[in-house]
Amino acid sequence: MNVPIDVIAIFDPQGNITPSYVHLEDEKHKLIDHKITQVKLQQNHKYAGIFTIDYLCRLDDGHEINLSFFVNSHKWLMKP
Image 1 (tube, rainbow, N blue to C red):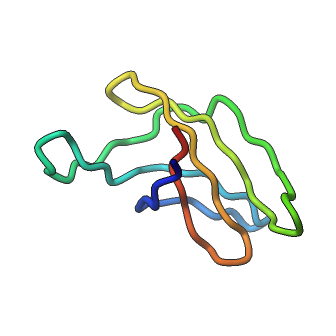
Image 2 (cartoon, rainbow, N blue to C red; image 1 turned 30 degrees about the vertical axis):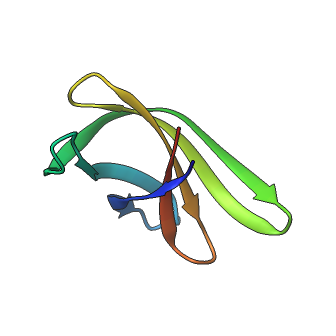
């Protein structure tokens, strides 16, 4: 299940997008900010005319998450 997520990203002058922070909810429903310490993989995709940029990111707590940025709608989703 894909979950909408808050992401702070850096956009450089060439238009490249790098996620920097994510806002996640823990098991007690408390919102916690995590710094993305490494982007391990970045791939551009086109699904049925929908452009996405998919990222595999390592967080400051050691966990890895998959993020997708939907280029046309400017929305971020976290994938399982």
